[in-house]
Length: 155
Image (cartoon, rainbow, N blue to C red; front, side, top):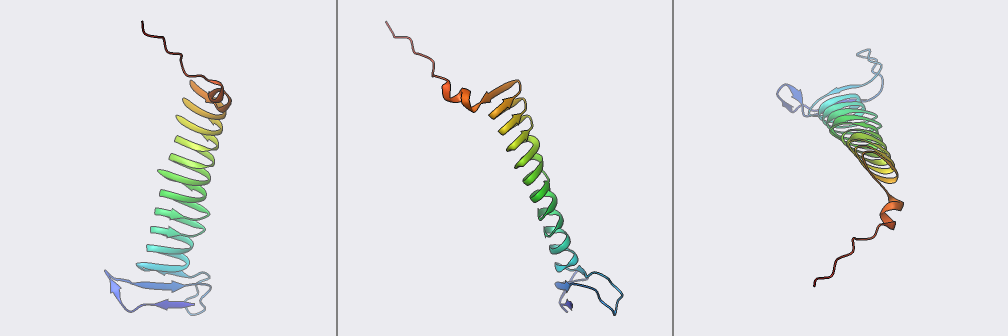
């Protein structure tokens, strides 16, 4: 399926849709290049497709400023396997990482590894969690048992 808008912006079509093989051009997968691109291989400001690259990219293999997909790479990445400055996903790697397994400067997850780590198993300089290991480690059981310091009575 191939559709392309006649309206253009800086030499690119406004919208292009390209899915599946094309006998006329000999393509085995649809390549869409537009401001709004939808296709097997999509590239644009807004890209949606199996392999998507753009400012905002959504797809199985997404790359962009904001990337959402199974395998997401971007400044803000959300997906099964996310890598970015801010990453959220099943496995997340970034400056701030949130996920089942998180690796980052600040990491939050079931397994969290980072300078500041919070999770079921937290490993880091400052670690808080069910099982925490690090220079400053606080396990949830310890937090429940701690009592506030007693105040001395004034005379």
